[in-house]
Length: 427
Image (tube, rainbow, N blue to C red; front, side, top):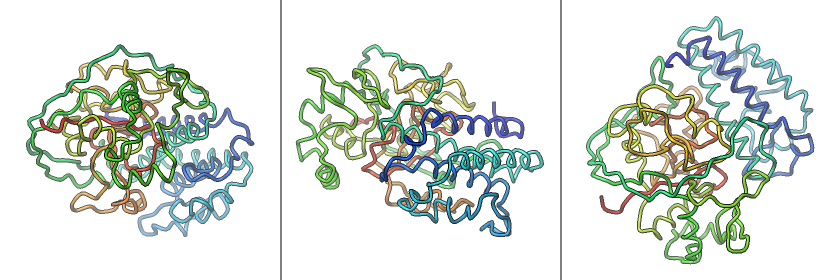
């Protein structure tokens, strides 16, 4: 399984990622793709073109002695100015996106073809950039699904199953005695790492107790019914400002149906599953729920220590990836509390990878000794302005996430497939 980044397997993964990319928007006509400006999404045709540009730049145009790529032009006219996300302001992307869909699809097809040809004659060091392009496309694939959810558009024609309902399970804590451990890690021949995971840093943890599972929709509903959104004492100053500015009175995508709750998934309303993980939570809502419940969010060091079961394993179930994990890869069209982790799991915790992303109490900051990678815009511009999430969601590709992987969003973002897991105030 660890040969996922060898040339043949990497080529197959690149084809798989591109097929997923094309499938997510394939069911929408041009009118559906041409919605007005929104702050929380990218215009689809621009974002698809950005994917093609990114893959071409890093896999076939990038040179160590010429990191700008200017001496190796793109196959698309003026591509660096139009599709480099570091150069194009978010609002400007809507004007650039006025291009024929056929042109975008041609750009995607041609860049993949040239990338696969170059991959065949690449060496191990060069394959870093093919891995980078693959995982970058996987991240955008989840962002595409987030856009469909935000816009209330139909879900994609992908073979995802309806999330099965779970049986009610009591909330239990798992105790860890703490200790010293190496947080983060080092990149290696098989274990790709983004720059914000490096270098590994020594961390010390006191004893702590963390919930076996994520907070459920039923538990969050009790917070809502108890008027948790109205008590100022439960919310931080920033949270109160966010609620006032956005006129927030309850969870995103929820509405009342008599005495019951309905939850919107893409363009369809479904009865709330009380035992499914809570999803589409902002950091502010996660904080307020914790105060209401007499709990707290874990730090990212605690989360990682728990996911690794106090050891050094790369995944909660061991050191080998599991490409059949039921709570990842959009195998189900939403989070479910009924999905088990891969077999032979060593961790006493459930769905640390998959289900929903989990907010932590830790701001997104560099580890000591941080050095930006070749893709310098990946982490460095977002330090001190974002909050760390860990784990992964039902929409996350399994080849992307592991115990050390750091996601990051601004505290007000509720469009991500994010929930929370809590810790006891006293271990």
